Length: 242
Length: 300
Image (cartoon, rainbow over all chains, first blue to last red; front, side, top):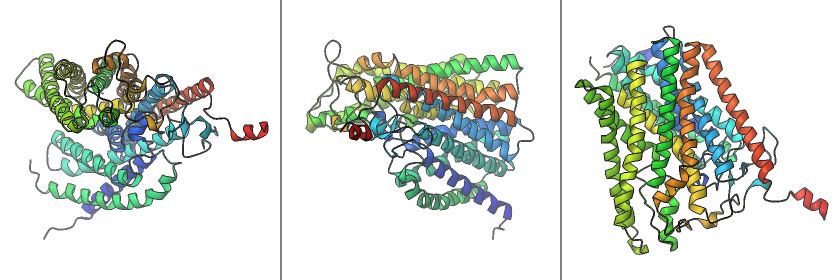
């Protein structure tokens, strides 16, 4: 009989919460999928999984570096470093993407989900070109994406922090970082795929009516899936030997 | 901090430059091989009766295929480094291996995709395969080289906790995500539908009706990459360069403190403002597509 350690339970719960944060983050990021790549929908022209994982993993790099080199690396500082890396990646991507929409395809930014941008108050519907669902990245989408990236970065950093703590006691620091990094990558993908089903591949961000409709169900699902991931992470630790 | 400030900044600048080249070449590789979302139009065209001479690979989503070639490059490099190879030689050989594997996937996926379209009479052009595949391999080689070099610098010089293959995998996935989000829009939104009025927007009804005639003769993927190299590729390079540079710059200057995090947030705020300025600029320059209803009513 394996003794159930309260610390282990806390770790599993933290991984569950981190996964849920990543799932929530995906809802904030404005992804337009294939239509957006042809400037036929508002948002970034790629898939939810690609973008959430891409930005979250940059956050993972910055968080891991912070954890490795700050002797007093507290959880909040490591999580903030993860958030910063993710935000910088997504902001740079959205900014460069905006340049292409503005000067490569030559379309004004417009959201199809709201009549006026909630932040700037700019009229949106008249700027949507014929036969499309909006195009480009209006300010509300940009800001929503930044918030999403921050949440994703925080989630990824927290998983990494927890897992390095678990594996670091069993194997060398380099190996522990590698196993924790790969596992975090896995949890990222799992929690980016779950909301993809909910949002149907595309979402404009927090102002999209889809957000309110699906976020509850997705978070609920994601929490349980992430708890399962956490259980696996703890279980494989049992088989790790130096 | 492992190095002094001047050396750290020099290393950071080198990484930024490598990332810019990697981002640019990644996007151009996806344009010459026609990958990711815009490829849906290339795939759809024969079904709409538009036969074409454009390469059609789409091995997988761009982040995954680039992650794959970069991680192969990183793994081979690590093996060679453990055999006491000179680092530059190891990175070049590693990058070459990754690119060759991607080239193999490119040929099989092109042949497979076109074979699946037999009933739409889309031919498999052997000349296209013969001279586009080396271009794909070449572009991917440069991208691999830059990414594995970044991973090498981060692991060996800066002392990141992750190993070279894992860092190469993460940067491969990130560059794919950026290329798919940025440069592909130039290929999908503009180049594939260039016969429409510039700035008219792309009606969904046009799906699959891609441009098949080039400036001279029939258009192929080499023509596409020539066009996308003017804007889509460099813009992707700027995005990855900014990402690599600005994700490390605050901690390099201000150390591992909350101040560095604050500076990072400030950079993001500046980017939000710059995006807003572009938004205002294009709204002013292009104007609305439709008149506002209130105005119409006022006129009536």
